[in-house]
Image 1 (cartoon, rainbow, N blue to C red):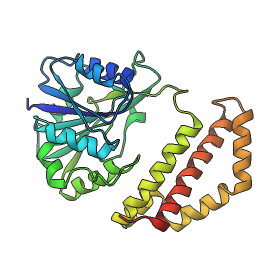
Image 2: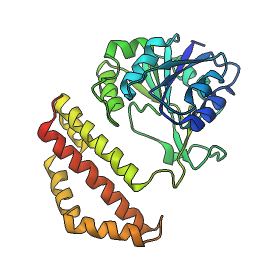
Image 3: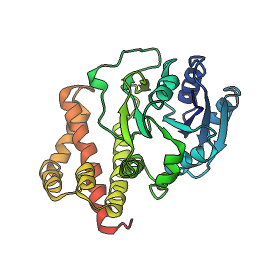
Length: 291
């Protein structure tokens, strides 16, 4: 098998990273790979976790918190001909790396992705099924691609300096280069998502960042597929104006405070508030942003 480089960008999630690296340390013997961890400005125990992870793991530091910049540094440092991206809050089964490499053995250059199975903790193990199929062409939680193709496509655009859309942007450029997409069911991993891990305020903050980056994406590539993907079109803005009118937002806020967490009413109210934060940021950034 070819040599693979598993590239992980991380920021202040030492405990999750520890589990992620431990799982990669339990890969099948047939897998030929290294791990490149890019510490993206952490101030917790991340450096110690990387140092203790073993000789297969190399650590880099990119002090400026920027996912695109961190992943580009990981690509540049990678020794493998295949780069596998995963996140620091994932746990890979023992066959994960080998299955990615196996998928690249037949045919021309390809983008290989696999199922992402959301679980509440690292102890929960589920088999992939139809729910875990994804149409996403390039999602950095679980995807691999020949390293040279990443360079030829121009790497991640580092102007995406907040959360969101940098992987979709690169995926479009890879697709335009003619790379086919392979969805490898056996190349699955677990994504750790505790039910109570993300507060409403944190979700709204991320939504605002993603809306801001969506405007940057649209300015850079003002095509209908991009507008549809980001929601940057008149019908969506009209919908948002109706369902996120200020009086309704006050109702949603009230529901969140009185409805039991996890109830249908609470869930719908939370999703409405998060969506409102995204659309507000998108519209505001479209009025002011440049690509």
